[in-house]
Amino acid sequence: MKKNVRMISRLIAMAMAGVLVLSACGGKKAETSTTTAKAEETKATEESKAEEKAEEGGSKAFDKLVEEAKGQTVNFYGWGGDDRLNQWLDGFYAEYLKKNYDITLNRVPMGIEDILTQLSAREEGGKHGIRY
Image (cartoon, rainbow, N blue to C red; front, side, top):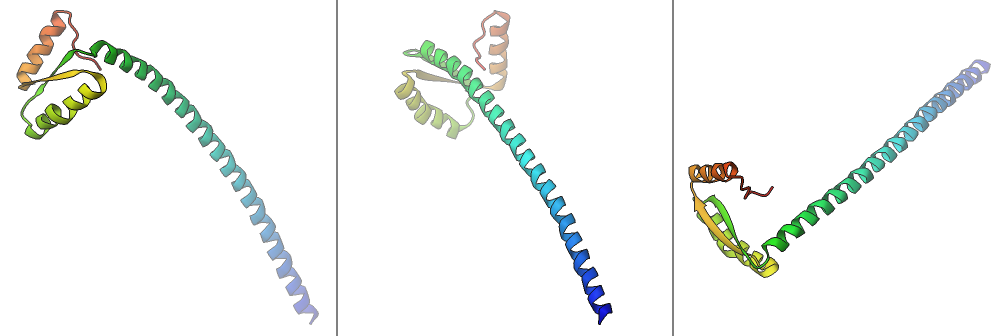
């Protein structure tokens, strides 16, 4: 009987030691997870602030560009070989630009060779008609 009690006591002691070891490991892991979560949150906040700052600059540049084009006709040089794209540009997009920005869209369909020739000539002449 004493032998059984001693064996049960040892098993209980080993089980308790195992629980303590596992608890200690679990606590450290939780702390690491919390630290990792905080670091990720900080990184996300910094990225968000950087994106907002970039959007502000981009928005200002866009607003200036729109103001310059307001009431004007803007030539859109591009490949004219896609009927669906042409319909969308001439219909929906042209109407959207006119309604929202008072800009008239003039689509100028061209082949790729013509586009490259036109761009090269503008670059050589010092005119930069492309906005990025």
